[in-house]
Length: 111
Image 1 (tube, rainbow, N blue to C red):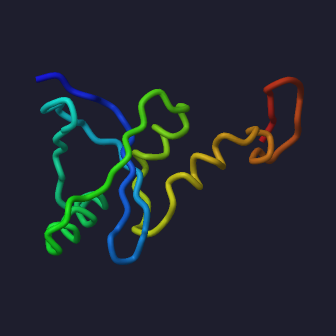
Image 2 (spheres, rainbow, N blue to C red; image 1 turned 180 degrees about the horizontal axis):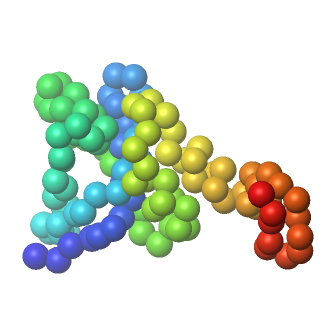
């Protein structure tokens, strides 16, 4: 079966509306269906379990061709409820805002 890997996926907790962005391997099962491995302990799995308890399908959005910072941010282990896209946004800003030290020239910093 063909796969989508890696592809960031966005989900939202049905009760708290907490968003999660994670990078999961998807297996294409049909024109409108992709299966994902819901690894125990992942925030995606917490969301899925909440939907299953209510007997509802879980909405999800798959990102294909997004900026690299999105993929990077989605694989970071951050506490539940923190926003991975806030990390991506911070990474997308020019790096010199986050570097401390004496600038020596283009792209060189003495720390």
